[in-house]
Length: 257
Figure 1 (tube, rainbow, N blue to C red):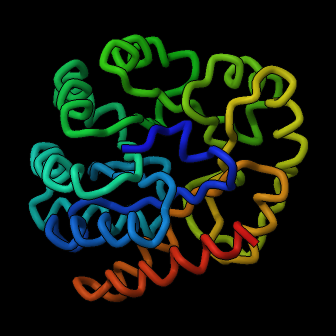
Figure 2: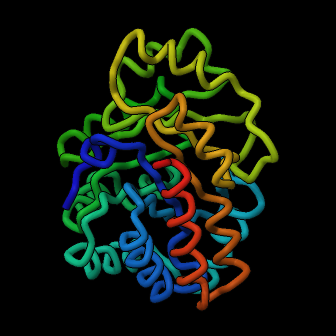
């Protein structure tokens, strides 16, 4: 199993997100295997939540479909345990504080580690409240991923200086979703981060096309794509494995060229 650090070693990283349980757990299992084969460098496993405040309509709808289909935290951990020996790509769990709290923070992190998950991303936890999770993550050998946004301003360097694994750089204000263009000055954010750390920086929120991805990695160490993948899964349902595989291959080619 590769580590989060190895995902960025010597090349630009492609980080792929999917909502676990959409359209069902078995299809999610097939999709993760396909993402691994297609060259994803990190796979973000979205644990569905009924009120995902940072998500746009595409991922919100996927979360609702997953919950209706019976996806639970236990079932996701069971799925990850089954597939972990078959893949080398590091896995990150992306969810909300309430999901972790309601399951029990220690119990969640212990189960995540046992299943083979390497990192935790909680987009609704501000930097000032990371103390509720980061020490427990460290105890269980899981990286707590820090997010910086265009509105972070002077906090960017404070956040980046304490970051683990990689810095998740939010490219756009608002919720997740595909955007026609990325207008945030990623270069300026990268400069501020680089003044305090050499940890890898991956940019997410709004990236959907190979052209956008190629543009972003001119400055960043990797790109994160969620809504575009989730949209493919919504369109193709249980037949989404091949379309997602081809999409990831195209994105990997774009950032590698």
